[in-house]
Every structure is written in C-alpha cells, then in structure tokens.
Length: 305
Length: 74
Image (cartoon, rainbow over all chains, first blue to last red; front, side):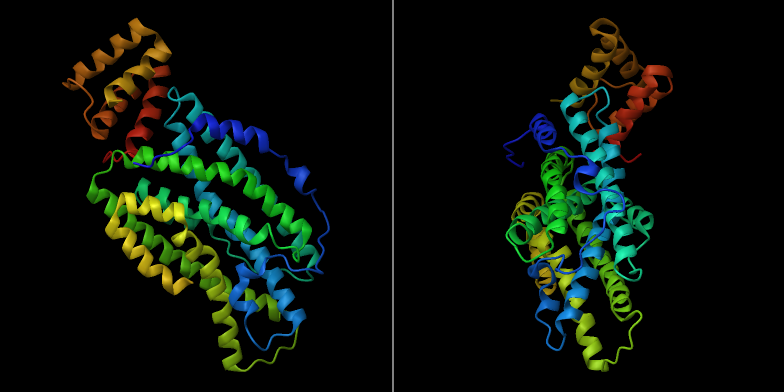
C-alpha cells in the first residue's frame, strides 16, 4: 500500500533545510497593512463573485476571512499536535528517523500556533475592532480524537494536503495580496509540505494493520468529521458577518443578508472541505484504502465546491 | 517485519542482545504466547513490561501507544 518515494530520514533532512524561527517571519507586535487583500481570490471565490458588495466591504471581508483562515489552522493544529505526540511516543526506542521526523513536526506545529496567535493579536489591535473566531479548539480535538486512529490520520492528510494546494495553486502566484500575509503562508507551507509526507508514512503504517472492515469504517468516520467541520464553518460565518457589521449602521435586506452568508459559507466549504476531499493524494489514499468509501467521499465533495 | 521482531528489536536496542532477548522470551512465556500475532498481543506484552517499572515501563508505555494506534482494543 502507498508506493511512497520518500522516508522519514528524507523528511528530517528537508525539514532542517527549510526551518525558520518565529521572529524571522513576524516580530511580536508587528503592525499590519490593511490596504490589500489577505487571501487570494480562489480561497474566497464565492464572496468575490457576489454582486452588490462595494470594494471597501469586499476588502474588509477578505481580511476578516484571512484572520479566520489562520485561526482555523491554529484550531486544527491543536489536535494534530496531540495526535503526533502520540505517534512520536509510539516510536520511543524504535525507529530513530521516524521519532525525529515526528518530534520535529510537533515542534513546528507548536511554532505555527504561536505564529498565528501573534498575527491575530496584531490583527485585533490594528483592524479597528476585535473579530470573532472559533475558540473551542480543545473540544474539537476531543471529538476528532475520539475516532479511530486511521480516521484521524485521514482528516489530517486532508488538512495537510489541502494546505499545500492552497499555497501552490492560489497563494504563490497571486501578486495582488498583501506581501506579508503571503510570506506568512509561504513559511507555513514550507514546513507543512514535510508534514503531509509524514502523514502519508504514518497512515501507511497504521493502515497495514487494519482489515477491510476497519478501513471502510475509517473512511465513514472521516466523512462524519468533515460534516462536523462544516458545522464549525457555519458558526464562523455568523462571526464574520458580525465582525463586518460591527460599529457600522448596516442596512441589508434579508435576501442580501442570506446571499452574503451563503457566499461566505460556500467559500469556506470550498477552501477547507472541497480542496481536501478532491486533492489527488487524498483521493489516491482513499481509493487504496476503501474504493467504496472513496466513491462516497467524491459524491459528498460536489456540494462543497 | 513481524511484530515479534520489531518488539524484540526494541528490547535488544535498549538492553543489549543477551538481556533484551531474555526479557522478550520471559514476557512471552508469562503471557503463554509463542509470538506476538496482532496488536492485542502487543498490548498485553506492553502492559506486562509496564508492570516491571523503570526503563521496562518506559518501553512498555511506548509499545502500548503503538498497539493502540494499530488497532488494539485496549
């Protein structure tokens, strides 16, 4: 299963080459520039296509979504961190390369969380008012980690490969977005590219012990986690609209309000769900584990496009 | 690589070939097993090591997590 062209040692070597420190990317208290969008058009596609928004509103909404985007990563990295600590613990006195790769991954995920915290403190200070973001990371980690280890690895693969795709297909080539935000995403991507590979190695390890029933069950659990994630995204939509309207006398018809919320939700769904569910590496992995399950995932993905 | 080979390898790495091999055989004997056939066997083996305390306990705790990740029922 999984004919991979890399091993744990390769992941460690690459991680050492691209490693960066927190202050290299963002100093504590650094001021943010709000003259440009933070996210590329494709990651806010449905909002970008929505009629009836003036440009200042569209820009503010993009920046609110950018702040929420980083928070959502910080959010999911909470459980990835705990999961990878377990995987590292399983390699103590075992495979040294695997242990080094996993402990580096844990350290890097913690660093990413600190970076995103740092960004969000500056954002809250400079945007003009505090913008609401999801705050129950530990509860979500509890829900995800209550699933089987293979299901947890599948949602982790989804997130890590989705991150790669966001950067390589949308962020990297976009010259219109804020250069600092782009640099921040680039540094995140540099290290996450190794995390996606480590996830593949760990998934292969766990899957080798799972029979077909356990593999089918893991894909069903993965879909259940995706659905739960969609519920969180809907919660973030409400917070985004409240942030957009804060401090302003906003008059919006019920139809326009509904269209706005739908556009934000569908943008998040595309960015966080569809991208991962249709990623080539994720699809290949699902097909090798459970062809029936892979078909179900493909069927579900369409409504998140 | 079989579970028995991997688990024995860890004990040998920590305690050396002679003592590591002896600990492995002793624990298998206590459990009435000829080999570690699946993650549930690994879990029982790990729990036995944990009861030994010290470094054996540390190895056992690692093997216990490994067994759980591989589908042991706990």
